[in-house]
Image (cartoon, rainbow, N blue to C red; front, side):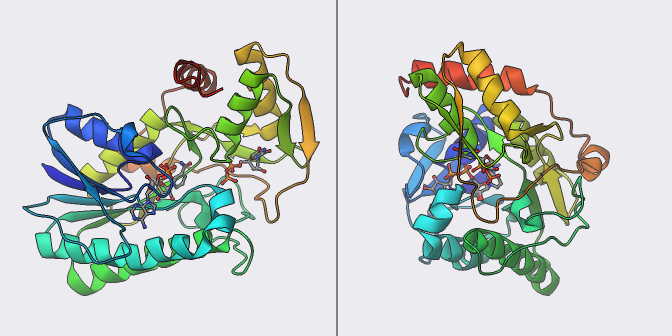
Amino acid sequence: MRALVTGGAGFIGSHLVERLLQRGDEVVALDNEVTGRWGNLPDHPRLTRLHQDAVAPFDVDGPLDVVAHLASPASPIDFLRIPLEVLRVNSIGTENALRLAERKGARFLFASTSEVYGDPAVSPQPESYWGNVNPIGPRSPYDESKRYGEALVTAWHRVTGLEVRTVRYFNTYGPRMRADDGRAVPTFLVQALRGEPLTVQGDGQQTRSFAYVDDSVEGTLRLLASGVEGPVNVGSDHEVRLIDLARAVIRLTGSSSEVVHVQAAEDDPRRRRPDLTRARLELDYEPTVPLEDGLRRTIAWFRAEGLA
Ligand code: NAD
Ligand code: UDP
């Protein structure tokens, strides 16, 4: 197989690229390093790097069997810092990637998100839930452009017959997250390793369900290989309160840090947990890495990289 992975120099993208290389595929990784870095990828004879903004029209030499569109900033601080870039890469960038897939006769995969459910009024969230999103709030450039992306991908399929897959990732963590990307896991790890207070936003009673990156990549590959055209939740359904995540990080790092409560983030979803029924039934998917194991592996990586 020959695959294009946009956002291939990013966190999830680089793990996906590695898995594709390991199984013998040829990969073109496209990225503009806005939030990723080429150093996340190994030198490999079957890997081509394409430094390119996905928002500008682009082409790729040779055949493609798969176009996986993962390019998009993914941290809430980036939704505030570069909202227009976020909106564009999930709208114009998605259309550019769809056009390329159509030209090449490739199967298309769109990296969507649990954020399409907004601050959910039902829990766990099944794919059939339409969500509760503030269209003009601080998270809206991301939430609404991912929702638009899903609509675009669905319409493209209806109009052209292009084979499409949509993965709704829930919070995914692991090695290669940027130490300063602002998301809870890298922030807490770095704070704990440095002996600084862990900044829990709000009362810490809000929940997330954290998936180790290998599990999310496994779900992605299963979805790509499947015949499931509608969106599929991928992640872990082990739901934890943020205050408990902070305490677990302190314990696992052996840190002397304390927890401090800082201002809650605006429009922060109170809870988030995937209903994984569809992934289990249609993809035979099951998350396999318990939170503590995944945190240990991530801590080891941050230590080895000297990031704290
Ligand atoms: P990331 O920031 O590490 O990776 C995104 C990559 O896309 C980066 O390398 C970045 O440089 C690149 N990129 C962004 N805009 C671009 C553009 N215009 N042109 C070319 N490259 C561009 O983030 P991630 O956590 O690996 O997320 C990957 C994908 O998965 C994103 O689409 C994100 O929305 C989605 N997702 C991630 C999570 C998660 O918990 N990590 C959850 C839900 C959805
Ligand atoms: N969070 C926190 N402290 C931080 C960063 C995040 O308490 O330093 C909280 C944040 O308020 C949210 C949860 O952790 O409730 C997950 O945030 P993250 O940015 O990792 O992901 P997302 O909000 O996109 O799920």
